[in-house]
Image 1 (cartoon, rainbow, N blue to C red):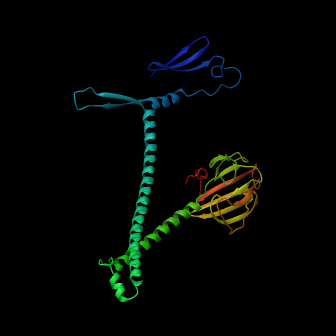
Image 2: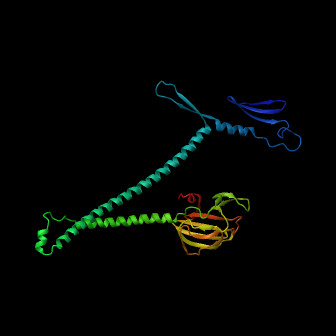
Length: 324
């Protein structure tokens, strides 16, 4: 579309017509854009570049719906930027649906396994009930004393037949299932105990995980954890069960505590005023491992907290909020 230039007494106006709307950039005569006096003029906006960006973003795309009948075709004109937004939303929605579906499938599989285990336990309980009933009947007969009395007291209906071989097989299967259940539950329990949860100290997050401006060098650097602002001397608590793998001075981190939790998890607590644990010590979630301080290169009273998974630092935020 053509550009239209208009000069007025007060300013110079550059206009472009988009259908019924005007796109204007005005420069007063006394501004640095138009003035040739006093200092260097400001760098002017490249109209052609702006023109290209706007044209690409709002160039309409026509979608035509042609019915197989004699009905009139439908034309739908959508700006390019609208198509791009729809694609982005579709990708986000697809990822969310797929993730939810995977979680539902895993939950259903676990539910079916537990139901199977419950069924086998019920069958075992029935077999045990039969054995107990037979044992009770035998005891009743034996308590009669003599052979004659035993025969007199014997019911006309025979004692319920028991297939001991079948029961033995069922018991073996059930024992194996119970062992599998215990192994599964123990594994889930170990993962739960090893997964960091909650804040290591009472306070607020002053610096988040990811790229940030270093408070000392003012350069953008990767921050492998979160900084939790807290009062000096406040207790620092382990966020999961584990074994202390390091406790001591660590250069810019000051007094540092590292805990191995298992299942690939490790947590670090830095800038402590003092450490309260030793290497090799076992700790439980909530145990005090140190106190908040300003050691190392800390610019204020806080605890630097990191969570590592399978040898790589991950965002502690999702564990602080209780998600794993």
